[in-house]
Image (tube, rainbow, N blue to C red; front, top):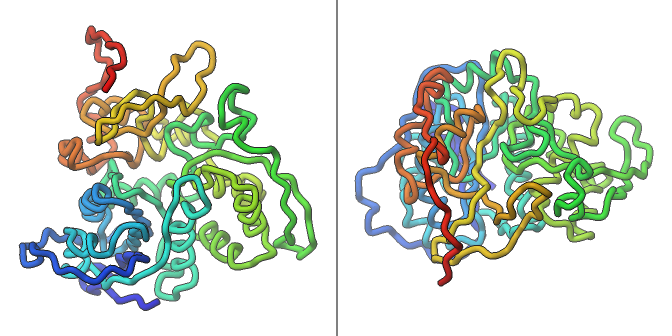
Length: 408
């Protein structure tokens, strides 16, 4: 695999790597000669260098990844982009994102890979593991970042790069964050038996998982029964934890590799939400780096407003883009909670109040096709600017009636 350096004067360490496994012939876009909308490449220095992984899997996320790339581009940052191997290379080469990474001074050459992600299978972890491996074993990246952040293509930061870097430098450098807004235990991953007995996450797996491996410190063979923890595939990690994952997964005898084999052999689902949190919460040297704030609490005394790293909305019935209405209850509601189909769902202006209340540093499920106004609002230059946004919500003392579920 060959990596090309981006323009040193503009983006010293930033690199956009596109991974594809398709072998379609290259197709030149009819719009290739159009004026490029390149990332702004801000040149200001920042106290923290971020390494981002952006994952893209279809037309929509390919389109939405471009404003996200604009938002996180900086001379101090590394940006890795993974395009799902199922997405045709010919289509990618007709996209605006392709033109930007090929033709702008902040872009880089395309590198082909072979990762096809299938929901609920181990393959969902592979883009993240690939990025960790690159950051750990490629000399030009090792030691060049302070935080590793994973994002879907349809995400946006709520703060600018300089504001985000200052926030991390002052308060968040010691933390590894592995949850999103809907974690039952807030910023701490949720152990399977902390869910109500009726919920599917409590009963999804046989618990605990038995794994056999060699201890990192002693090399002794160990048999361990591992509790499963739920968090998120969208994480904010320190370099030493990134290196631990990358090095351990190259070692067949390690705890991480043994847990991986158990996931694959036992055909466990939702591995992208459980594998990394489960590893961290079962490793004493990293368990203490996870925030202990419970649901509704701020990450620390100085940041009482930061109750979640990412905000998603997951609480309503909604038709698919093709007009198909959901009819499957994915999560069994506990007593006192109305049954509903689970999300996540696209965010809009009416989510501003909840975004503010969560304190989220990133929002997920935003789309130019669904609500372009959010791209005019975020990112902001400070938390104060976020707090000054209007409190627009779905329940602003408005009288409304929810109709019966329509039929097609």
